[in-house]
Length: 286
Image 1: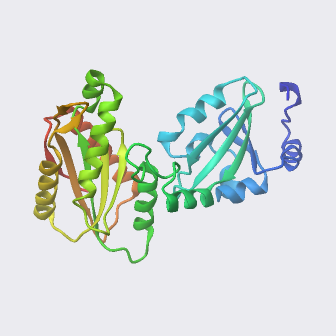
Image 2: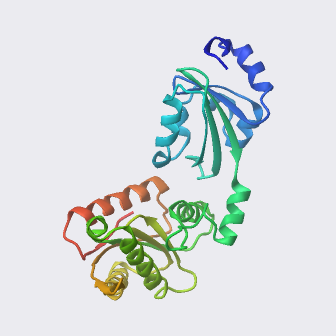
Image 3: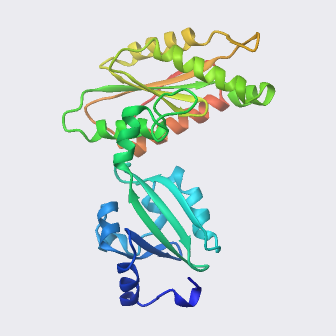
């Protein structure tokens, strides 16, 4: 479709979207200009709040970079992305085709069912390929479900970062770091209880969602013990690789914080783990 064929009048846009075979949006200058009813239903956002909204703000920030690049690309190439909605972390798939330098046609597909099948089978949508543990977004989905449940029990969050993993990869290569990450995941998993959920939160990080009513001193003791127990050398290619770990732990009580607040606290803890003294434990306040 060439630039001069892209409709601009609202009625023309409505007609244009009506003939699209799937849930579709028109995005112009970074904002949603029009949407068909099917797209509104998939996104779960009323038309009055969707039309005119900044398109990239519909998704969680850490997944928007490839989408932004596709929107900025003037080539009429179809690109597909798996993303998460900002509200409720619902998984969807986008297909983006640039129509001209300012306008894109965006197809929207609900992939929640595929996501559920992946979670049940440990597939790539929900699990990390290196450790086979739940990935970041599956962890956050479970955490969000806990935060929004009416009668959720208290839990604690424990984040663990492998110190200086980037330096280790620069020195020894990705196969060595993957071996270390896999071993650390197995060691953490072997020290958790059945109800606890462990996943790979980032390249060098793990997150545990623990059913817990422990106070700060008890949580610190658990975190210290785990940090000391997992940080012993890993045998790789006939040699031993030594490393340390940093841990942050905090309780989520009856007054549940927002997911955004939790993510901000974990991000700050990750920054401290990489810039402060390694091999440390800290208590997080959510």
